[in-house]
Image 1: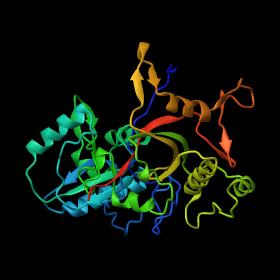
Image 2: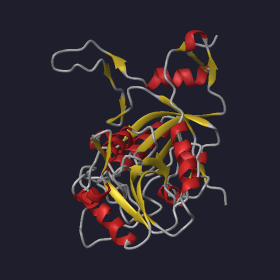
Image 3: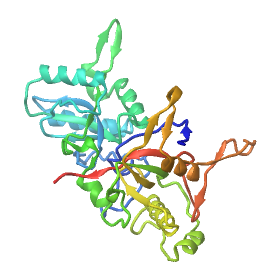
Image 4: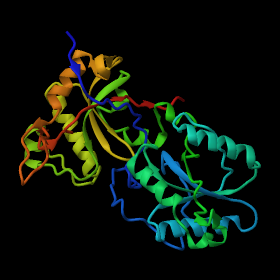
Length: 342
């Protein structure tokens, strides 16, 4: 009999790299997300790896368009601490499946009103999706900002000044292939995972269960890692930053136990998953998800252990660990990313 599990299952496409950015050698070099480069001598040109989701802040055309756009880029970086970029190609307002209904309507309106001309656009990134908390915070911040370089564009609405960036909206990175949102990783992410023996990109199923997520903050107990893996592999950032090494080491430790484990490195994190499935389950009574037994067992195996809160530690769950590396407290079902069609 299938077990009914009351859990919010998160389906998502793992499509980007690390939230802060990545090393030139394609290692997982997680930088401090609060640090935003703002060199007035630099031109922060948009690249394919800046994304996959962005905020389209403003477009410029006509006289001195490039200069005006660059001023906004630098002010967003220096004053507002936002990773702003310049794109000097025609910006097309094409509707994407990942957009909300309000964004689709605004895109349709913009595409109708604006002529097809060469222009410069200012975008802010780098976000894994439009549901990301940093994306939402950045969008709110942008819509209410009053950059000094746009003082002449401030309008009064009902006696109240309106931000010249009030119409900022989310958009896929315009340099990414058009079908990136359909569950396919771009070439940059594919290259990041090319050396992984147990890459999630090789998982034959449609779904898997994410059991661990790393963003560079977890500390590995090196002695336990060496004991279980029987190697001297270090998480010192020579080939991968700590988050990437955590995922690789944990995946290897699980494989040593005979577990069908996979690792994946993207623009925003490194993860470890378990299992390969073409179905998840069905909706049961009262909106609960009735998981297939195999997935339910994975949830039970790796979810955190409940414990009474104390004054020293108010967390109600203690994560399990292997090789000195902690699992997530709550596993999630995710969709397996795939290589881009060639």
